[in-house]
Image 1 (spheres, rainbow, N blue to C red):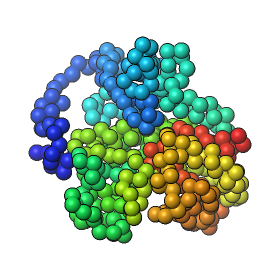
Image 2 (cartoon, one colour; image 1 turned 180 degrees about the vertical axis):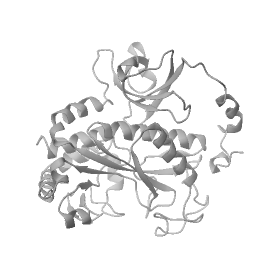
Image 3 (tube, rainbow, N blue to C red; image 1 turned 120 degrees about the vertical axis):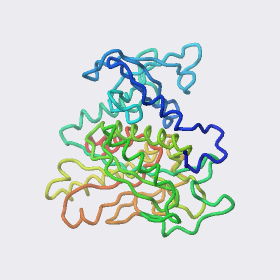
Length: 369
């Protein structure tokens, strides 16, 4: 029986046990379900639809280009609505399982130009130019679970939980809400082939984090976007919403970010700290450019989060420090001690486009653009 808290008052609820009968039906061996996934015109919404193939693809090129109605995804007018899906990364489908696939796609307009929300195109160009530096990324994706009424999952309906303090990496029913969803998402990600590196409960109750990486170049965007799709799909099964809002609850509560860990091969080698410090110096000169690129609304979402409080830097000021979670850029203490490793950019918002984040970091620190 469904036990998710979101079923209370959730008019869209269906009994998942009924679905199980259909999931066990035998399917033709020569038919594969491919779920095409793309980013809509908001720059943060995820859409998908399924296509049956009567053969098993052996390479990315085997997946056909498809189309959809862009006037229903904030990407086109009804009079010229066709948008085109170009497969760019393939993952195993943890929901349908078997040979079925998740197909992450680039979006192109009728004139064969990338859609405005297609940040992958320009990111790929930058990564190709910087490939000799072998840029690695790891992104810490924070998110908040909401009940169907939009209130944080597990919070008392007529008030607030106790102050922050006992919830971060917490254990116990009074400190952690929604672990079932977290565990399901973790396993679904591993099955899909997403490079999920870990997870933990965050500072605000009902808030969680998982980490994706290390990924080289463009793959960080591919893996993070698919991990978000999986998060939304898993939460859907539980009747819960996972929001990437950077400040889902106003007041004395932590916001949500997507801290980006970054390094080049020079940073990862002995003596790399000097290269990290050089990169930070370059970043300090382009603070506004990065803030503009670090959330889909050109810094407006991050204004609510980057206040200088709750483990954030002030959005208007650039800062850096060793083990300082109140700085724009943090150098982990271990990195400072051993003299090489990576830096952590703490400015990206939880709803950032990882392609844009990776692109601007490499532009600034590697290509000097």
